Structure formats: structure tokens, C-alpha cells
Image 1 (cartoon, helix red, strand yellow):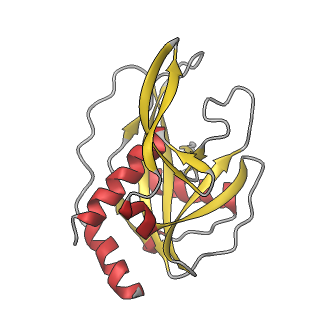
Image 2: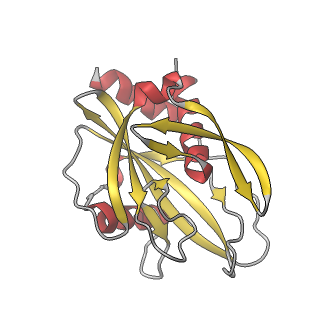
Length: 197
């Protein structure tokens, strides 16, 4: 079973990421790790709940381990691996990276001078590793991949954006809500996997 799903994941990630459009203005680069691992419930996807912090626009949200590309990072992939180690004690190796998803651009954050361009890298591990969370993460969740593929917890929710009510897509699972940029990255991964069936 491990080999079959692993082969599907490799096939799903064989296609290159979509071409990135050039970004206008100042851009802050970031990278995240989408980590899939074989566990008691089969393949699962790791996400973290960000700690509640004043001034953090994603405070308390479900996200993938990751963060800004720093001057000492060799490239975006190594930035994602470094951030996963710092935030979750997760020691990823580049050989476990299956490929890259399309980059996602965040809206300019209120009071922030730069937009963020986030590159997402997909990793596959033979087993779920021990995790050690730092102050940036309040919890870690392993979401069953098959449930995500089956659409469990899919729906919409009302979100207030500058006084306007909007209906946004979401996944509610294990008492947590996945939405926004993280859901966009997750949806691309799930679509790629579905295309391998």
C-alpha cells in the first residue's frame, strides 16, 4: 500500500509547477512544506495551527510549516526545510521532496510593505516523525489523505473582509478549519493526485 500511494504521489508531482507571473512592487519570498507520511490511518498530511500572536495576520490559522526565505538560505526548498525544522522539529531531506506546487501570492497585509510570494514543496515520508513544536505552533494535526480526497468537511463559511460579507471555501476537520492560501495549495495537491487515478 505504501508503494502504490507513493508512486501516485510521485506521478502527481512529476509535472512542473505552473509558470509564475512576474510580481509588481516589493515582494517578500516565503516557502512551505506539505508533508505526507504513512501513519496508523494510512497516508496523512501534516498541518500546524499557528500560535495566537498580535500583529500576525495568520494568527491561529491552520498552515503548513514554513516562512520567509532568509539571506542564509541556499534556495526556497532549503528555506522550507529550515522552517519545518525550526517550527516543528521536523528534519526533512531534499531527497524526500517530490516536487513543487504553483506559487501563491498573498494580498498585501495591512501595514506591511510587501506582498508575499509563497512556494510550496511536497515531501513524502515512510512514517510519521516525532514532532517538537516551537512557540510559533500551538498544535500539529495529521489529516487523513483519503478523507481530504473524498471531500470530507468541505463547505463554505462567511468571512468579513473590510465590512463586506464573503462566502469562502473551507475544510473543517478534527475541529480545525483549513482555508485561504493553505486551502489553495492543498487543493492543487489533491487535484494532482486525483488526476493519477
